[in-house]
Length: 103
View 1 (cartoon, one colour):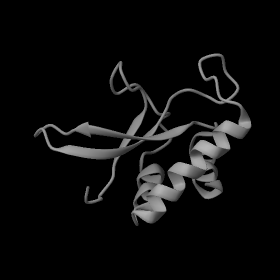
View 2 (view 1 turned 120 degrees about the vertical axis):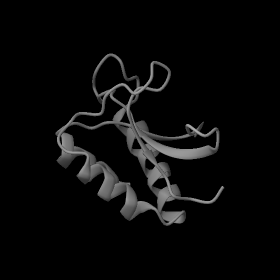
View 3 (view 1 turned 180 degrees about the vertical axis):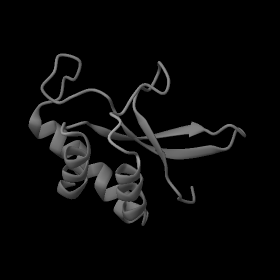
View 4 (view 1 turned 60 degrees about the horizontal axis):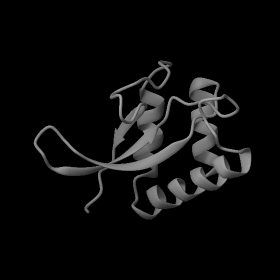
């Protein structure tokens, strides 16, 4: 979890929460995505305490490690450039990283 938080902080200079979402891709196939939300820790639009943020990111990091995609996530974060996670959809704003896992 700490490594995931650190790479996000190094990339964008902010602490952004992460979560796992299941969505259908353009072909209608269900896929798992890691979402880096645009909400910043400590701002009004995010109602997480520091402790909740750490617990949530630890849980996500455990899942991506168990699934064997931690390096993929780190590389995609680093390859995304300095662009801040932005709204992809109104329903789930953030940077979506498609996870190469078998469901």
